[in-house]
Image (cartoon, rainbow, N blue to C red; front, side):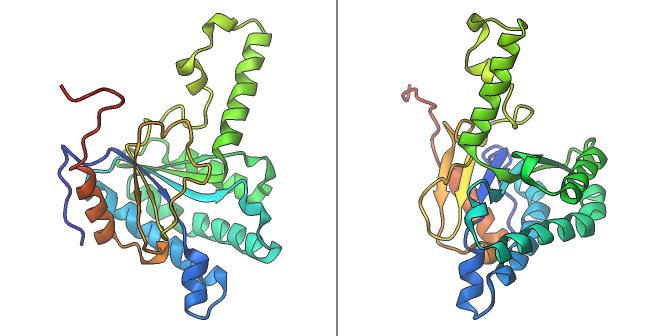
Length: 241
């Protein structure tokens, strides 16, 4: 079991770019989908570890707007995995006190998957032990574009004026408007880029890039990253007094 984090220094909101499933599988001579299944099991373990580590909000990057460029076989397999996971884990997520939300554009997702997402959100809406947000068909630029369109419509309808438009107003139209901004963003697999993830929300987040491939990212390693976060000084643009 991971060592409990100091509640005073642990990040309340952690976002994770779960990278490396495919490479993990290839290294083992298995198809890439084998890695995605292993990655899904790791998600379950990390979510379960969050309360003891002081993490109230966890946001995971499950499928990006750019991931449609992958092979049809891999995309179909990933979408099937999402459906299986939601059907199989819904009861345990509910009983464990996990509140599940999904962010991203649902218009390209199939009706069965969207229905399962809606049902899980509704069923777990009152849970408060851990808030798990799954970014599915999500891209940061796409999110801001959709938010700007909704904001422009409100201005067009006369419910807002151009003078009402500021950063706080725009943030209310983002997919994450009910969530606090992430304190820490972790990316696994050794890649050091943010890949269009939570661009607006992560303006002042701390970043941690780890070499571990996602299926090997254990709760113990998660705990070590969180402990390192507690040693950082966050000034949010100010200088030390």
